[in-house]
Amino acid sequence: MGAVIENTSANAKPNQDVFAATLLKLAETDKDIIAVTSDSRGSGKLVAFGQQLPQQIVEIGIAEQNLVGVAAGLASAGKKAFAVSPACFLTARALEQIKNDVCYSDNPVRLIGISAGVSYGALGTTHHSLHDFAVLRAINNITIVVPADNFETEQAVKLAAQSTKPVYLRFGKKPMPLLTDDGNIGFEFGKGRVIKKGSDVAIIANGETVYPALLAAQKLEQDSGISATVVSMHTIKPLDVALIAQLASETKAIITVEEHMISGGLGEACASYLLQNGYKKPFKIMGIPDEYTVTGSQVEILNHYGISADGIAEQAIKLLSGN
Image: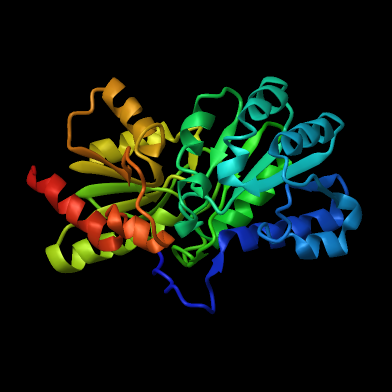
């Protein structure tokens, strides 16, 4: 595997910034690409898109149900609609439209959830999207993708633009470093990326939790001699069960990490597959517990719940020691 690239301002950008730049580049040569926003042109980093391609952007205002309905109508007419809105509102307020107008009607809308997880920090649980994996996993006919770094984001947007089925892409606000400089680790929907290979414990993460998982793996190796595999399981649906099965056979324990409620997300998807296929080794889901979320910045909230390099490493040691 390639070396980890440090998280510096020179090479780390928020994934939603990379989304917007990639979408603009694609739209410049594809007039069928239409950005649809719910008063989220600024937060979605689409100001430049609107200035350069004013005929390819539709502003709905703060009306997420209408946002999804209009995007579905555009998709039904052959347009490549990207519906951009904060993930917390897009996947809650407009859930019925996602279910019926997009998925049930098989309209290939690209649903873009920005400022996801606890990115909004101190704005609180009304603005946190800790439910989106769970509710969308329960709906047929949608691909759920959570890119971890700028490379995965760029590739995901390009694949979404080509998709003939509904897709949900989830992005956060924090600058994210490239996970590896190994250009041979490809990207495709439904196939996890092995960022680091190990033999003792497998850490399966997605989105912005993959980087602390990678730091945890380095810490485990340096401090405890524990060898950890780190996987960016960017696609929750369809899940890469072949890779999960391989990890189950090659390692002594599995940990999943996500910026989502522990119910209904990546961890439960992995657990369901493993349990139904006879897995009997130690397993742990790390995420936000079923409680009133503490208030603070994104980093403070995640650190509180152990979603950090130290917290993940500590959990791995406990799991391997039988505690």
